[in-house]
Image (cartoon, rainbow, N blue to C red):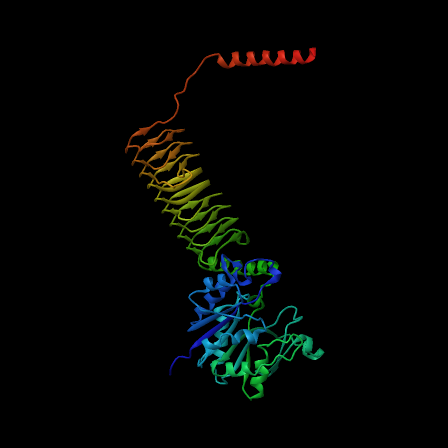
Length: 455
């Protein structure tokens, strides 16, 4: 028996006026990537064969974000059924299952979509499967009218009787439809309503009118949160972060104060990692097993290898690679640099465009001077090298293996292995000078005061 094919139509043409933004609504980020990308990732997880995204005019940014999935344009926004119809060419001749989803509802899970597909392919073979949910406040949601396991109708709240409004099973808008029936049903949807729009929900009544079965699968309310405002985006972010934290802890990490740790959709955290409070993971971060991350750190596009210790108050920027057992301490910033195994960069230091060799020690206040206003240059610090506190390494420069740079040095040339580099002004002492200086300045100050009294 051949596998039933699956397609997905993602509706993403909404203008999102309540977001008050030049950015298309579905492009607003959730855990570091656009909402619509979240949804497409979920769709891909259930093994769809084809996905098409319906966009509005001027939404080229959405097209770039969803590539390689194709887009079709809904020039006139005439309702949800009209939006799905814009995918007619893509769906023509398709007789598999078609998921209809919304780009501003990014929290739906692969498990829920899987249940919808399973229901569509069950013994009853319903033409339409609607995703329902039971919200705390049903309010203006359309109600799903059931007869046993059969969906008989979707009644909009404004058209419902008091008895129908008492039903708490509501319509999310998400559907799974028999592709062989979908276009015919859509062709027969009318717009005889107050808004003059073509509503996707009407296909349920049309299917039932033909004697076709319709069914409901229930999902959790938090999965079906539609994001139409900045406040709702914040609520969705909180839900997504809760999921990411749980996944990290289920995977063997300890989060001392989970609610203060923020992750990205692609954050990878190993086993036996300990994360203290107030840590932020931007996109592209991988943390190995047994790492300790102390409080108030910020990471993005970086890797931290097994057994390393980072923080508190450390910042790892794109291209930072921290080796096994290395130590990155407080108020240290690493950018596009490799800190090799066992190296120590303990405090108040900037390392950019550099290599710090294995077991090297970088003293407090050290900086790599990597930028001259036009170009970036590389600093290479050898294995076992020791860089004294408050040193400036002016790139391009190479510090050899085992070399020592004296504290307070400004190093502008290469340092040979196992040698000492001292690059600072010679200290000079002048006995009694400070006392004489104070006496002279006190007399000068007193003379000016007397001049003012005489005027």
